[in-house]
Figure 1 (tube, rainbow, N blue to C red):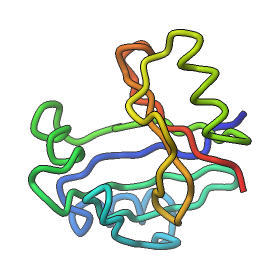
Figure 2 (cartoon, rainbow, N blue to C red):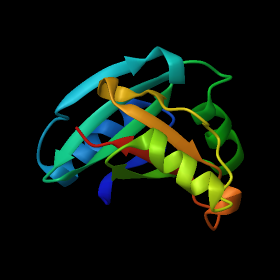
Figure 3 (tube, rainbow, N blue to C red):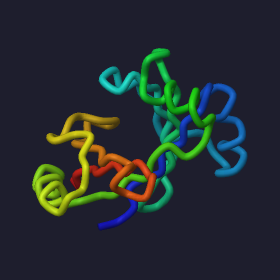
Figure 4 (cartoon, rainbow, N blue to C red):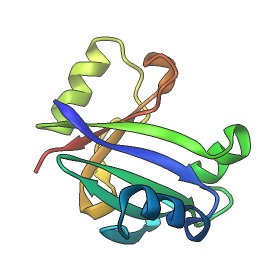
Length: 131
């Protein structure tokens, strides 16, 4: 298992990107809209992990709700696992509360699932299937 990425909720990609471009010394490696998540994503690859800046595309999206409650900042930590569906079954059997009982498509068409923060010390954890 390894850290795949850190998701950072931002009010506006156009406002946040200049600071991250200065910090990292370059433009993002990719940008896309993930319709299912109602989010626009800018990705900075950093070796084996990455930073994802997340902007809501709908006022009812999870990112918009997060920003309303907590403001901009770290939204989730993502761990890469060999098989997301199998890991979800193992975690649920171990008493971890799930948000997603089955994997779904995320950014880059990767298979993802979220664990409920009430079971993970208040941190929203996303699992992504290693390719």
